[in-house]
Image (tube, rainbow, N blue to C red; front, side):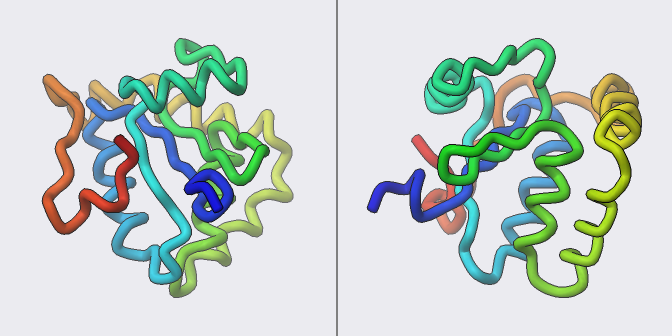
Length: 136
């Protein structure tokens, strides 16, 4: 079984402080080991965006690949929280809000994320303990 079939893949903006903080949060709450991670800027990130014909300029913060289904923006975030431990799956209830409304809020935060949270010079390098969670 390939990693693509066994794990859900989270592609994220590797230089965004908010995105990196979110990835670390998901890792801490991923008690069932559901997720693997790759920066959108990495070769694997580029491979996935090409495979699924995703415009990385329009979708430049987070996406989720679950088997052969790709979720973008707020829908990706909600599908991610659905698999976390604790009470976080309750946030999946926001899926009933129409995507155009959820994505308006998501896009507003995404557009301002560097201004509000900062930006790194290069992609995050995982610690040796976390290296297995990241795709090379």
